[in-house]
Structures are given as C-alpha cells and as structure tokens.
Image 1: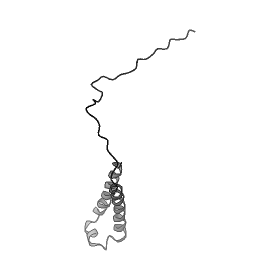
Image 2 (image 1 turned 60 degrees about the vertical axis):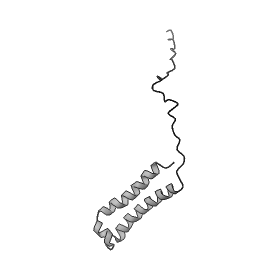
Image 3 (image 1 turned 45 degrees about the horizontal axis):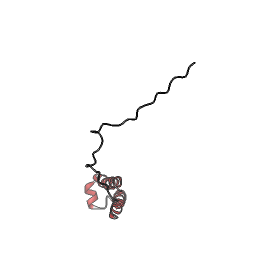
Image 4 (image 1 turned 45 degrees about the vertical axis):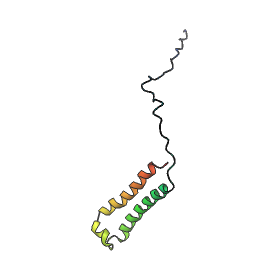
Length: 90
C-alpha cells in the first residue's frame, strides 16, 4: 500500500485588528505592600477567633447574645474578606 503524502500546515497569523496595539501597553503591577499579607492573615485569624469565642462564651457576652446567628455572618465575613485579599496578593 502506498504511503500518503504529509501535508504541511501554514503557520497561523492572527488578523491585525485582534493583536494588541503597542500604544496600549499593559501596566505591570508591582508586589503588594508589606502590610497587605499582615492584614490578610489578621482578618482570617480574627474571623476564626470570633466564631470560636461565640461558641465558647457567646451567651455570656451581651453584644453576641443580641446578634444570635448573625455572629456566624460576622466571623465568616471576616474570613472571606481575608480570602479575597489572598487571591489579589502579589
């Protein structure tokens, strides 16, 4: 059986209107400031501590007693804010 010919593919070049123009240079972002990871970790630990204190002594603390189940929203809100900061950390 004869061997088939190998076809050469043309190199793809995208249209010029799709390529980014040199005038639109992307601005490189530098590293995050030194306080950023400190604040990020502080928020995560503070949220965890808030939920822990609510479980241990929530009924004895007047402000936590008034919030009742919203204490979880406060604690998880702090932790999620720290998590969103972790995603944007450079």
